[in-house]
Image (cartoon, rainbow, N blue to C red; front, side, top):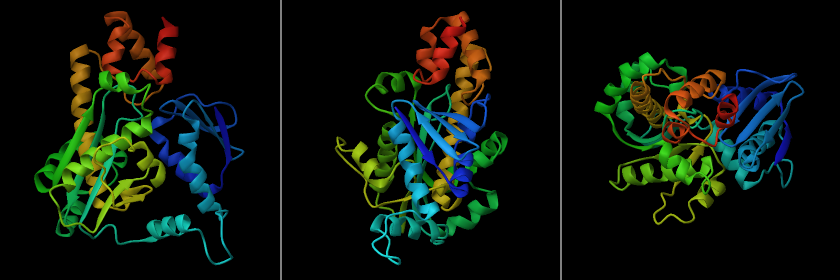
Length: 313
């Protein structure tokens, strides 16, 4: 499946930031970047065309189609002053500055763009009085903080706030991926950690998720779940707008790094992060040393890296 979307400058800038950790090292001619988003290859061209290719292209592109409607002012309107309810809701979310200094539960994930290492999702409960402490530590989106800084401040955060985390190792990920695409995996994991922390009935103003799917699609992913956490506010780039999401991002990253180091130590091979050409090189080394079946334990087999690694042998 291939989906092509013409984007404006604002959407382009958001895409560049969003796919920073998923970018391939080699970029096609006339492309700004090419990235692996689970089963989908995303290419953004200098012509401002974004091309989504893969079996989950419709899912990967859905968020950007809606984002472009808002950024370009092409959202459906009932008249010149009245936007659709969905667009109104998104504008309120994007422009509301009250998500930082409040009592909130927020969740975020790490590892979905890494070939090696698990997926980690964390939900944190941050009280309004904890916000200054977290700001002083420099808490923000974990992608903007070095791994060394993460290792320094994550234990301090964990001592101060209540959180719950869920780790999905790659062996289990590979067992389920044919049935569950990446966004469904994320929705199931977010739902679990959010429900676990909310069942203790913390006093919250908001429950916030860093938006990776539209609200209706998120709940569609959970249609078979026995228990569903509702009342969620979905925000793009929520790590920069809400301290609970930012704290969850850092704790998730900290756990991911610890698990990643364990895998590296067990192999006696330093593993690269992401899904670039260096990953292919190390993947081949692992297969030569331990056999192809080892990838099932430590890698996300549906990534394009697997095909490239096997073809290199």
